[in-house]
Structures are given as structure tokens and as C-alpha cells.
Image (tube, rainbow, N blue to C red):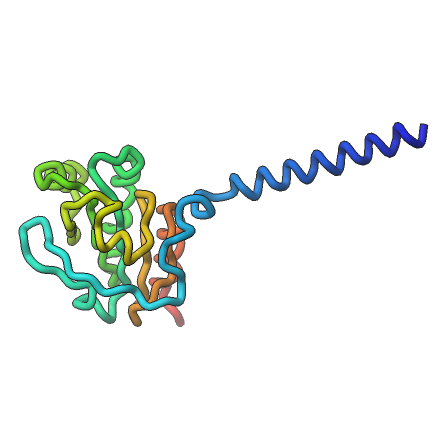
Length: 180
């Protein structure tokens, strides 16, 4: 009888450990896909890339503003699914001093342009027109998965690196809240 009770307790303990581990590993995509991205508290790496209309754009030109870098590509199914949400956030936060910069990993300019038009991306979009794994900016920001987003504060420091747009919205709400 004691052995049976001990066995039941042991099975229950093992089961709870397995469930806890499963919950921890499935908790959030950032623990899988954002692990190598630039860390909060670090200075955002400056970069200079071409906009879709061929002009030169430098991140440093946005000093003093809250910036969202949205890493995406037209060929990426998750990016296409998230694009309307990013555009909605842009429209919600643009008048609160937040600047969005779309960083595309498209290799064909025509595909990049079509996606910008299709999703109504009215904000700055830049690209090296290189595959993600070959691009300098992906290396600078530790981007290994898209969509990925980095939020930069007014001082030029990274405050969030994530693959989850809902985390970006929460952070932007915090950063733009009026303080009395």
C-alpha cells in the first residue's frame, strides 16, 4: 500500500515537471526566435540604407524620437499576416512621436514595392535588396527570424527586441503615455 502511494506521488511529481517544462518552452516565441537579437539597454547600431525611392536613409537622423524597426519581407507568410497590424500601430502612434522604419529582406525591388503598396506602408522603408542571411543589418541587429521588431527610445537605446508585435504595441503604449 505504501509503495503504491509512493508510486502515485512520484508519477504526479514527474508529470508536473514535464508540464512546467513544456509551458516554459512554449511560453513565447521570443525564447526561440529573438535570442540573438540586440539586447535591451544597448545602443542601437546605426545604419545607412536606401529607401524604396533610392534615397539614402540613416537611423541616426531619427535621434530624439522613439523608433520601431520592423524587419520583414514580402515572401514571408508571417510578415504578410502581421503587416496590417504593423500599419495599424504606425497610424496609431505616428502622431505620438513614434517613427516606423520597415527593413525589408526582399531581393527583388518590384516585390518590395508591391508589398509596400498592398499593405499601405506609408512609413520609411529601406533595404539592402539582399537575403536576410547575407545582409549587414540582419547581422548588426541579430535578426535570424522575421517578422522581428526592435523598439529604440529617444536616447538611441534598444528597449525591446521581439518577434511579437503585441509586445511592441504594449511598449509603445508605455513609452508614449502622458505623465502628469
